[in-house]
Length: 304
Image (cartoon, rainbow, N blue to C red; front, side, top):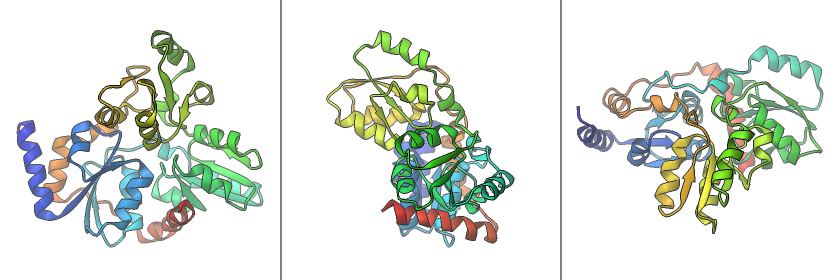
């Protein structure tokens, strides 16, 4: 099937079946254009919860579909493929969480939304990169076990010195691979470019930043900035929205490997097949769902 025909069939199926399509900024631009809403994980999780549609196609990695299902258990949540997974989401386990809980009093287990449903169930509250600072700042507990992302946890620790952070060794391979020296090489060529950095990057990269923020934060900053040239330190799917909103500004990547292979598993063919068959569906065991919903609901409550 040709690309144009696929796109038309997707539009027809979406309307016929009343399906809400959500897409993360990291999926291919053509998928973003077909979506009803495009955004970061916090925004999309809220949309999935608040919209009236009973069938949701979530174009992103598996934990995003899980979060939508947890918050809306009565809705049918499908994803283009179950093979699109976030490696960082699996870089912590129940045994490690229990070990830390045993060793620390006055402890809150703070779980980055980039995590499995099981891990959310062992946590006190979920956060995203856009709301983590405000939520952690307002927690009554002094000790914070931040999982699974080591880099976002260390960034928050620099902003909240009154909290005692215990770090996990998880990381996003794409952000972890962005190095200070590589960014400086790009900056040497584009001397006037501002450096926009996602907080999943290492501290040495964050120290170079003109701005640190979530995917939506980076897009907002670049759009409002009087500057016209930017070095982008996050997954390059974000370029679609950046260029759409800022066609006369220039955006530069750092390295060719700045692409998440799992996000790119969300293809037009996969989207069409999911809409056509309403599979694969996100299905969670009830006890996992009931435990995980508490941390996500607390995120939305504190995130207000």
